[in-house]
Length: 592
Image 1 (cartoon, rainbow, N blue to C red):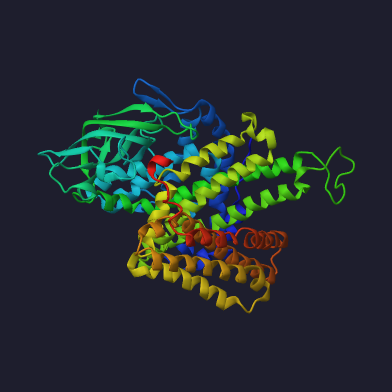
Image 2: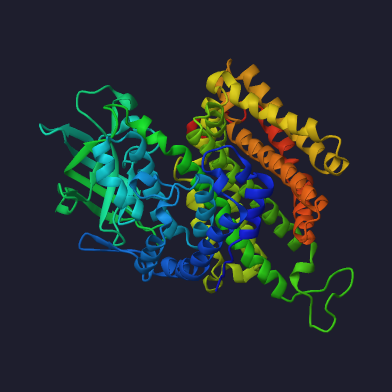
């Protein structure tokens, strides 16, 4: 059976050695002292490893069931959910005015990693509620906030997001769900939504659905979409639950993974709904939560790789097979553990160097979101908007890749369900698809985000890399191993951007055909920057007399591996981009 230990020491390194959270001028960050974040992470880690992780395989094997219109979650989920709520975890970073604790989003994100690694299917229920809370908090009326937020923040009520319909996925302009205005100011919502995570379950007393729909007579296409609050149970004036609303679950999907989370077909039959935000501005309200939602999905990618990696390391140290080619390491045993073999080391180092770089990138991104929200920092908001498709797309692509790489360490046992490794790969797979499939993330990056605000944010990113290199080039420990590879990779990325500028206007396909490669390149450069920064922080800790020298030396060695073995992939992706769209678009549709 798989196990999980919360990587609290590494998270603390990112929060304090890399990001220096308690020293930042952002409101609330002075509270993030080492002792405080350690206490929060230790408690979350216990909950993750002792309560949520043992239920992971239960959720996978038992799944959810639909009985008489009610979804039953796997055994133990309901009790675990109560423990999570009793601990106040759903409201960790939520508005104190409505019962939240107001802790910075960056720490909420770190806790989310622990819960996602331990039991991704379970954590999705919490994640959807958090997104709904964010949208209501920004766009709702005061009365709506008072009605819905307190019990959503405690976890008594959960939330969902209803976008997708059977005939339209990404293209929401094709939406058919309608909302008819009523004399009392409410709306009657009718239509069908699919792929709704947690659309029905037995964990909470009420489910607050956020539903995209069109008001008849509004503008055509995406400009006519509005967002509505549609509760499962109507709410009486005294706050108690009233009659069942006209919303029901038609079926639950049978999926490749994430069996512990109910993915529902939702039917709205004249359900009472309340406009959230302005008429025909539903996408604006929905995009309020999009940066956080997509960052959380990127986190899921590396979180699954983390738990798979932990188990692969244990197996590689226990499994005896073959001898070290330089001489037996354990001559008293029948064979050496497979971790002595270079190819197993390569596999594990690929995983380790990605996961730790991804963690740093994600928490840095969460830090930018805090800066944008708590300081109204427009530059931070623009930078994180640029980074989000990279965090979501690159980290989930690689997260799945390395979950399967961990499976490979087991050989045949990795393919056998009793060892539990296939679940990590199956669960990680969905993160590449939902919250905008990764191909769409690449198109968003190249088609929209590079040119956002006249390209100022991507130029700011390049300047950030350039400045870091320039400021540290006098440190010979960093120069050859970290700064030179980062400079080369950054130049590759800038060359790709120049290719788009020179060729994309003449033929947009030249840019779009290379968008996926560009997203992957940028992901590598981002992780290269994170590793260079982490190496600097690790050297500083060693120079300052840190007691745990092995931790910091391991950090530097891991970063050195990424820069030497992973970062050069930017050269390959640049060559692909420079080949243009002609080979991509050469075949007629009939010839595929």
